[in-house]
Amino acid sequence: MTLISPTRKKVAILGGGAAGVAVAARLFRTLKTPDVTIFETSAQLEYRALWPLVGAGLAKPEEAVRPLSDYMPEGIRWVRSEIKKVDVLERVIETEDKEKFRFEYIVMAPEAEFDFSGVKGLKEALGGDGVASIFGQENVALAQKELDIFQGGTAIFTHQTSGAMGAHAHRIMFLFDEMLRKKGIRDKTKILFCTTEGNVFELPALQGTIGEIIQRKGIEVKQRYSLKKLDPANQLAHFEILNEEGKKEDTAELSYDLLHVMPEIGPPKAVSKAKTAAKKPLKGWIEIDPVTLQHPKYKHVFAAGDLLAEPEAKPGLHLRKQVPVVTDNLIKAMRGVGPALFSHYKGHNYCPIETAPKRALLAEFEDNKPARSFLLDLSKEGFLPWLVERHLLPQLHWNLLLRGLS
Image 1 (cartoon, rainbow, N blue to C red):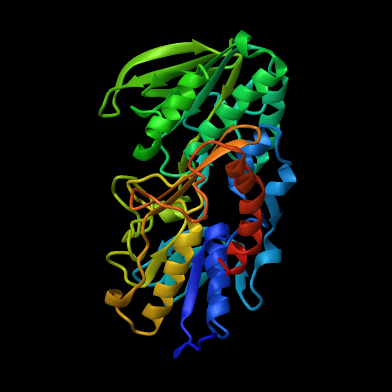
Image 2 (cartoon, rainbow, N blue to C red):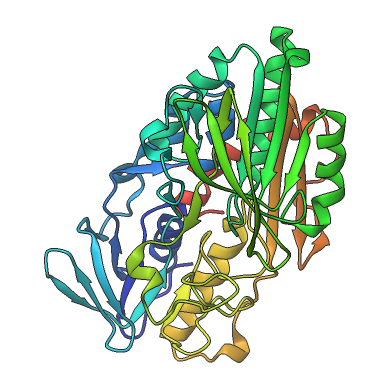
């Protein structure tokens, strides 16, 4: 049923990735002629969940990207200038070309950005000489090449505390292990997993499962190792060893033949500097009520996506649960309905982990408790979870979620 907003409120959506597009599509399906502006500089829409599969040669790069224009609702305004400043007090968004846009409601839905600059020498080495990363559409095809030409030696996979997409580092490492077994060179390779964390996975409920897979595959774990510098000419990686408080305690130098790097992940600068930014646990990320997805102080601000400053990681397809809550509560707020009658988000985590070609598990949680969206239990390794992850979920993403139907 289409509703007519009693007063046609101006809504700004910051970010034209999956979260922003899904919210926009749902608004246009629910309201009659809504006044919505979306801010996004990119012309492409990415399905980032496919990046580990592309890196392992199990999916084509073009499967993970489509033209954003194909998913823009008819009647929406699309501003493609970079955002310079978000003033949530005055409800003004200023772009780099000095234009100012005024709004009554703002949905913060930026996509995570990847920062490789924190590791000295990494940006220059990335994409060649054994240095790779599947993070970034521009990097994933180069990573696939580096992983494919590897002929044995020491392979290092790094993992940073992220709050989003943390499972990608595990997924590509597990698939790489299987690539080596298929080539018959696994016994000629030492795989190291260097994580800044004091555990093997960010979701506590999956630490045991991931630990078992790592042990089964013969992967050596180095906890609290933070990559700081590369010496590409000598294929040396320099790490800081952290204590429990995350402070430098020692250093280590590791040689590599292949180095796969997970970069620092965070929000765009304009978002991290806005008054909606959290001070902890993820500084600069979007502060939000984890139940209503409304900002606790600025009631005209809502948020969705990977960059919410929640304590739990969000390594999976949480948007299909977030988007209906955000749009429903935004519409209620526009109609003068208070938070007491808002819909509730249950902290949904949906984490796909491929352990081999045609073998995966799909772990699903709500409020840190096991949950199930499908009739069958997909939380155990097998072929069926692989089919769902590789073939069904991309179709649901492109054809339902991004069309406002999920």
